[in-house]
Picture 1 (cartoon, rainbow, N blue to C red):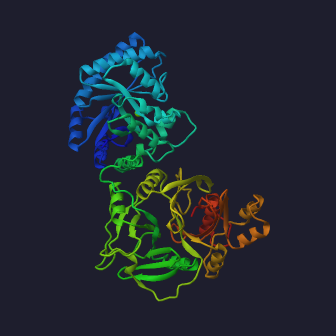
Picture 2: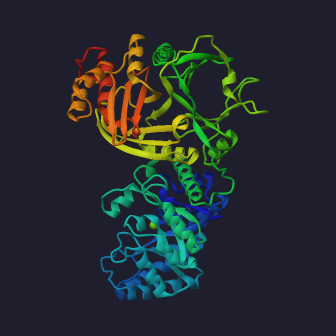
Picture 3: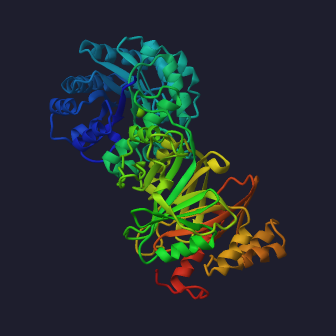
Length: 618
Ligand code: MG
């Protein structure tokens, strides 16, 4: 199987931090980014020994710049410089150096000269048992496409000279990776993988600030990887990703995120790593767990009941209540927590053990759950935000003690015939820095797909959201990840990282009436939202008035409508929604999120009915 490598430039910290983090995440090797070595007190041989102790191969020394297509007087200095770097490589015990296409101001646009000079340096490298991988930087002075770098390498025709193919440099220029298949595999000396979001900007800042791990951006890494594999490339798959977030993040966590991306990419192209269990079918949520603080427990219970759920069971040994309606199940835990929050997402699957093992193989920490004798022994792992992902069987299985509903003593109340059908989605607000990792985690482990991205001007900054989902009907599993790009200083919302649980209902007007009758305050965004619905031609004035009277927010796309009501924030961060999807609406109501956020803010600052907001943040 291909070796997994990581460029040290990807990670934050000292060289020793980066190496330890890469090893801990299971990488087989590293690219040594020369500035990391220049800042280390250890000599190259000591760095080599450290890597060997960690079980890391040094796969690449990088970068070597401004080598080719130079006037003779400059090229003489290149040879002197390279002889010294080759000596360093020998001490490091690495046999391949990355040579970037020149950005030197005196480099000339002459492929023949480039080929001759690269042949010369390759011959000197070969004398020492070394080899050179020539990479076309997307912003190279003259050589800026992979096919041109390959033509030069082919013309140079030296066995110690090959190409390095970096997915960013190729895909950022819109180049078709398919012809990579025609390059002899033995001439592809190295492959670097990076994803990126689709941005209309110069390739240099795009590369320096916005590279992402595979699966976190918009590039077709699968097509690129498949083409390289078809060419017969036999070297390591190596990640070269740098951006403003990863460069300052905890290197151990970033390395896990990095390796997870490689494992997911390999699986996506049909070559899963040995030991990675394939994904068993996942059939939507089993339950959502809300951990409530003591001050909010009653409020949460009242709101759940008002929206149509019934308390149907009490846990045999824990202060935990099961609420149900339709296919929606909510587990409310009253174990002491600092603030009410969504503590776990449980999914139904054909094979809980395989799903949990898969998550663990994708570097999610296992979380053994304490349970009394005779209680369900559920498999769980930690998601990136620390919440639990629980893997539940769909039905009782012979010989297995993990069917969790049996842990609850039924509460003898008649079940109401209401309007709740199931769980529409869970909405989370990870820190902006963590959205890529969180998104990749759910995609890799559960097979969720990106269903859309939105950016709205919210009261406290630009908010980006993305909807991930899979399945349909009762099997539908949707997670919304929202985040503010920048949040600094004291002027901030009282609910900096809200979470919501959205219930799917078949009649949101009826749910609204019932909730209001039960004394639960639904968020009122004010009349302007409804005027706008009329102006858009979505509803007539009577319908708008009816929606407003019921506190129903309305969004629409080309496929259908999204009608929803929202409770006030219950405790520190959680609110509930009831959602009626009409037709094939595909979003999550992002368009009305700013008005909803403003209403939540006003409710917390002033209390109900008082809109005279002061200037002091709450
Ligand atoms: Mg590169």
